[in-house]
Image (spheres, rainbow, N blue to C red):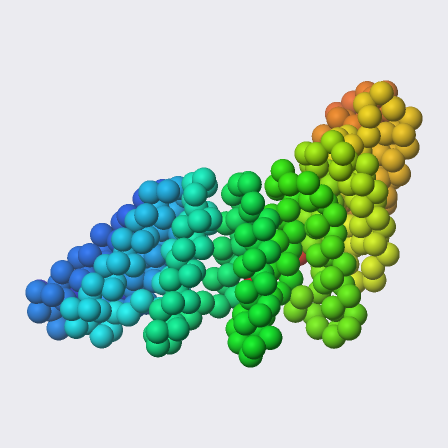
Length: 366
C-alpha cells in the first residue's frame, strides 16, 4: 500500500522521538533509522529527504548517550558521514555549528581522560574551517564553553592553564568584534571550576582572582551577562575546600570565608545548600582535627545560618556530622536521633526545592 510508505515527516518524528527518549540504546536506534532513511533516498525514494537536522538530532543523541569514549567516537563518525554525503552532491546535508558542537559535547561528557584534548582539537578545526570560508561552521560561545567544561572535568595537570588560554582567545575575539564569543558567567565560572578541580599551587587564589575580576567588570559596565552568581562563588569556595597543597591551606581557609562573607552580603544572590555543604567541607578539611573548639565554632555558625535560610538537606547534615563531634552534632540538630532532612522542621528545609528549580533554570541559560 503506497499510502503506508514512510515519508520524510515519519522519519523525522521517529528519529526525534528516539533521540529524546532517554533509552539506553536510543542513539544507536536513532542512527539506524537515519541509515534506513538515507538508503531509501539513495534508492530513488522521492518521498524521503534526509537533512542536516536529522543528522544533528542523531549527533545530539550520541552526545547524551552516556556511552563514554565509544559514544563520542560514534558521533565523530556520523559527522564524517555527513561530510561524505555533502561531498557526493547532497546539498541538503551539510555539517554546521550544531553538528560540531554535538561532537564536542559528546567528548566533554565521555569521561575519557583525553577528552578535553580531542574536544579542543575539534574546536580548532572549526576555527580553521570558518577562516577558510565555511560560514556554516562558526564556533560560538557554546563551543568554547563546552571545551572549557571538558578541561574542568579532566583533572589533568595544566588544565587550568589550558582553560585560561581558551578564555583569553574568547576575550580577544570578542574585543575584535565577534559578539558571539562574548564570555559569560558560565565561561568564567567554568574556568574557576577548572582551578578548583586541579592539583595546582595557588588554585584558590587564582579562583578568587577571577571572581574579583568579574565583580569589578560588572561594577564598571553593569553588564549582567558575565556577572558572578552563587555558582561562581561556590566554585571559588570549592577550590578552597579541596586545596591539595599544604602550604596553600591557610590562605585557602581565609579566602573561603572571605568569599562566603561577600556572597552573604549581596542583595540579589545568596548562599544556597551547596554553599553550606562546601563551607562545612572547608572546616572539615582545612581546620586541624584536634582543634575541636574552632571547628565547632565555625560549623555551628554556618549550620545556624543554613537553618535560618531554609537550606538544610542531607548533604549538609552529612558534612556537619563529619566536621564536629557526635555530641556536638546532636545538639545542633536538637537531639533528633533520626535527623534526615525529611524529619527536620519545615522551616529548616523550606528552600531546598526552590533551589533545585533555580539551578535548573540557570543551567538552561547556559
